[in-house]
Image 1 (spheres, rainbow, N blue to C red):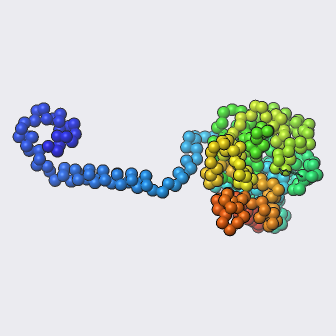
Image 2: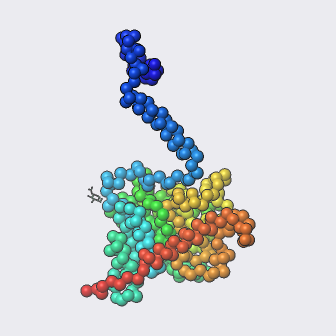
Image 3: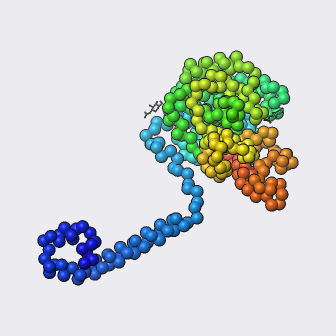
Length: 384
Ligand SMILES: *[C@@H]1O[C@H](CO)[C@@H](O)[C@H](O)[C@H]1NC(C)=O
Ligand SMILES: CC(=O)N[C@H]1CO[C@H](CO)[C@@H](O)[C@@H]1O
């Protein structure tokens, strides 16, 4: 009887089955008895698993596999490169840190470093940090070193707290390396959190950049902390020409960094560039000090969840004016005043909702510890 309702199969056979066959059926073999029991057990196990799944405390799902759509083995990676530029020892170390992250993240694209042609690779002594770091980049991270003529623009003296010259136009050299199909140019004062390889496969466009979202809604300006470039000789020449004609640092970014390269890139591509989302490709540390995140989120209603923001970010850029960059010592009292405030009862013993502050401190702390590790003093054998 049991079999009659079990499956379609015995029913079909039923047409030519005799009555004897029918009454034979209850003599189940021990095998089918076991099978039937197992079926019950299976149902219960599935039910129990499902229940556990639904009642388990919800954790935020892990980020998806990076770029599952890219067939890494089929791509000719020598057509793509990440590039950075350094014009001082501090920034050279930052560049090495960016290359260290890219290597650890498993990026297979080439790595380029533009640096002033007056630097050299001959390590004269243990104190010759620049040559040491250049050699580290070359030997440890397979970076191709590209010496260039770095032209500086005299900065407005009021803003020249860190450097007297704006050498940011050095990044324009990335337009000139025409042996590559695409370059992802990164500023080095950032912590790279995830691979950005997917940007090599954007639709064709001379440049793709995110917006300087903190200037919204008054100004729609492209932010050059990351620039996805299709190298082109014509563009390179045109940009070089505009370097000569550029106004002297008119673009005030409200970060008190006058950025000459941004001015040039915005003049040329402001109305035509592909805009990549600043969420993921444009997070700045200063965002954790704000309480109004609608321009970063691109939404008035979405809730700011700092951990989620960090998970979706490909990098975080250090920009917390007036606090100096993380490799400069912070004045303690300024830090106490400037660090992100908690959401509830800030500044009291009952304060809570301090995740912004915790993450912000972690970002800085992580950077400083890595910096010590990646750029530590190395003793190279004396040059032959
Ligand atoms: C990969 O790209 C480089 C540069 O365009 C080219 O020289 C090389 O032949 C390519 N390799 C293959 C296997 O297609
Ligand atoms: C965004 C910001 O704080 N900008 C400051 C830049 O520096 C000038 C003075 O040098 C300040 O007045 C601005 O507020």
